[in-house]
Image: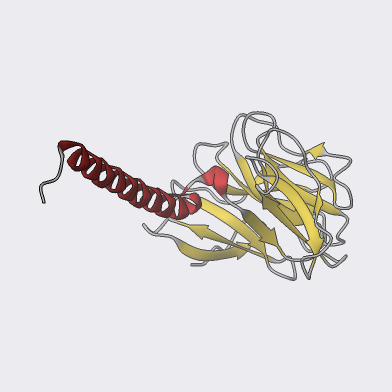
Length: 218
């Protein structure tokens, strides 16, 4: 039986339509896969950065869950009672508890570049700026006695480790001094040592030094 030109046209149209739909479906799958892979690579899409609980049993973390930029939150150690502490157009991240659990230090871009601020851990009130310069001050970490905060900064040309008074950001002191990148400082439990990462030997390694910056060991 010979098909009419009209029926042939209908079949051709169906084939083209199904083919187009198949291409669209494949494209959607590919795009979905790409965007599933991409988020971890985009700095402003980091979902969370958590720090261990303070004396009050809370966990502080940064998240993009409510907005397109990171904000600071706290929650119970079982994930309940999530409370948002910061709310602005800047990127607030890297929270760090004071030893008594009353304060949280964090880095923020609310003044244009990364600076270190501190706020009340209960409700985000009493926000106080601790650093103020055109460089990037990042990754604050409280000393065990609550008197000092160590941090990384490129204020002298490349990232080095610094320490300052926790109360007001006073007496900023540079602890490392070399042409490599030093960063991610952390105190020992007794406050006598500071560990940090460095590329001074050509690749990232872990180092430890006295809290005053001397006797550095790899």
